[in-house]
Every structure is written in structure tokens, then in C-alpha cells.
Amino acid sequence: MKKCNFLKDQDSSMSKIELKQSLEKIEKVINDACGFFEQMNLPNKSNANLSKPASSRGAVTTARPPPLVIGRDKDCDNIVAMLHDKEEDAQPDTNKAQCYSVIGIHGIGGSGKSTLSQLVCAREEKDGHFNLVMWVHVSQDFSVDTIFRQMSEAASRTPCPQFNNLDTLQTNLQKKLHGKRFLLVLDDVWYNNRDVRQYEKLQQILSPLNAGEAGSKILVTSRTKDALIALGAAEQRCIPMSLLDEDVFLKLFKHYAFHNVCVAADDRIRLEDIATHIAKKLKGSPLAAKLVGGQLRMRPNIDYWRSSRDGNHLDDTMGALWWSYQHLDEQKGLLEVAMKGRIWKMFARDTLMNWCQPHFCNLK
Image (cartoon, rainbow, N blue to C red; front, side):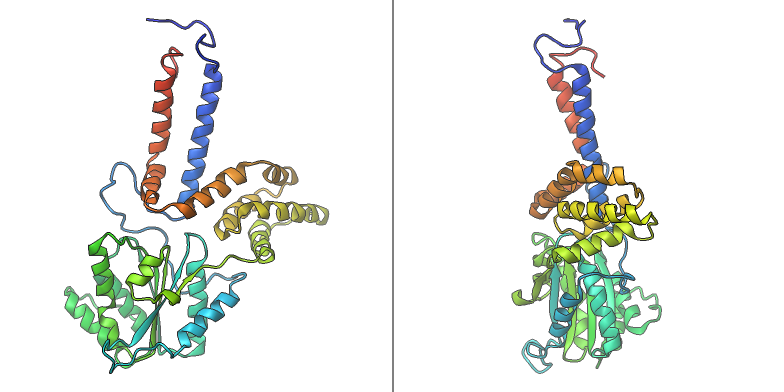
């Protein structure tokens, strides 16, 4: 067996120290990516239970908007106008006998779909156009009876009786919707167009809603347009999340970076200037503004902010990951599992170890 007594093997130009540093860099990138995907509220799966779906995809959303929302007033106005539009409202005596129409908002995780829908709900609660305003967080893995219970409680503002029969649940919900024009928000709907069972469950959710009054509306949020269309939204009523204007995005980023931060006036001016440059690296992503702004807020130090501005870690972690996530399609699920289960870490280490074995001995 060949023994290595030198720091560098004659057949390799990379030392053990350099290789270890490379492994550490790879591991850091993977850990950064894992943190990024956790902030995106992706399914919490590991290689220990890949076949078992997650029962919840993240924090459950509610109809209440955050205390401060920046830059979505125009989008809210457009959605409200569509909700009040009578042109495409189905009438009970038509062939479809459908009292509602569907409007959908789609966009990548962290783009503000739920926040925009919350603004719409708050507006409609005050406006009084709808007799009922209901909010239901659907998530990735849901049960029809749970959704019916949530609809029933949202309609009556009282706890739903513990019916054990799905037909009874549906009948109870229909009674609460009868003769009322409602707005139902189905937030965070996940859909795989190859999953027939999932499509059937979504259709089952819609089944009791025809008990409402003509002019009722369903507002759906999802990462994909397919989910909106599966629930009955017409193509022209599938609305992509718009990018914030540069000045509005800067205001949003500074809100996260400076909220409750106390610094000297001179330092504040310098930090404001640095923040302007950092914001340009974040590709207009509200989620990136929240993540990076939050980190900067905890360290209101000029040197730290300068290093963040001048380094390339924001470009690599936030820029490249953000771009790649927008372009992920079928590979997204595998990548999420890999990131969450640290498969990439094991793969990288094992692959590099196998590659290095002919060149190094006793590599730890």
C-alpha cells in the first residue's frame, strides 16, 4: 500500500489543507442554501421519511395583514376591482349553475402572495361588498374534512361541531353559505398536475360552494398557475405577482434593516448609503429583503455592512439561489429534499473522498 509522507502528493497539485478548505466552503454553501429553503417554508422532509408527506408546510397564515405593508396598494386595488366585477359572474340559472368565479395570484415563495391577499381581505371586511369573508390556509398536504371545518368556522365565527361524517360536514357548510355572497380565500394551494388524487381533493373542496349567492368569489394563492386553473380560474384571471419598483423595494429593505435600530446620526447616513447598494444585489426579492435586512439590523456596524456590500456572498447565495429557484420545475422537489436531508453534503464529501483516495492517505 502506498504511503504518503508529504503534504502534497506528487500526482496532485492540491494539498490536504487546500482540500479541507474546499470541503468547508462547499459545506458552508450547502448550509446557507438549507437556511434559505427553510426561510422559503419548503416542505420539511428528510431522507429518513421521503415517502411520508408533510402534514404542514410551515406557519399557518391568517386573514390579518402585517402591521406595515409597503408597495402593494395598486395590486390590491386591481384585485378588489376584479372581485367586484360582475361581467363574468355566473348566474344560478346558467348551465354551470355556478354562483362563484375564481381569481388567482401566483408567484414564487416569499414574493408576497399571502400578504397581498390579506390586504384584500382587510379591504373587503370594511367595504361590505360580501356578506362573508373567509380565509383558509390549505398548504401542501391537506384533508378535505379539515378544510370544510375551517370554512364552516370562518363563515360562522364559531367552532365547528365535531361531525365525523364528511357528508354532514358538507351539508352544515352549505347551510351557512346559503343565500350569502361570499369571498373565500384559499391561501397556499399546492398542486401537481400529475397527481389525480390531488385534483379530486381540490374539486371536492369546491363542491359545497354553489350554495352561495351569485357574485361570490374565490381568491386563490399558489406558486403555480396550474393550481389556479385546476380550481377553475380563467387564464386572464391568473395574476402573477408583480415586481416592486426599485424605490419601493429600497424602502422595504430599509424597513427591515433599520427597524428599531438606534445609531448616531452620522452613522445612520453612512448606513443608509451602504443599504442602497446592498438592496441592488437582492434582485427585487421581498424575501431576500427580509432575510438580509434582518441580519443587518442585528449588526448595525458600518464595517459589517461594508463587508456585506463589497463581498460576493449576497450574489452567490441570494442572487444565484433566487434565480435558480425561479427556474426550478420538476427538479424542485428533489432539490428541496436534498437540501433538507443534507444529501448534498454527504454526496459532496463522499465523491471528493473517492476522488482524493488515489492521491492522499489518511484523509480525515
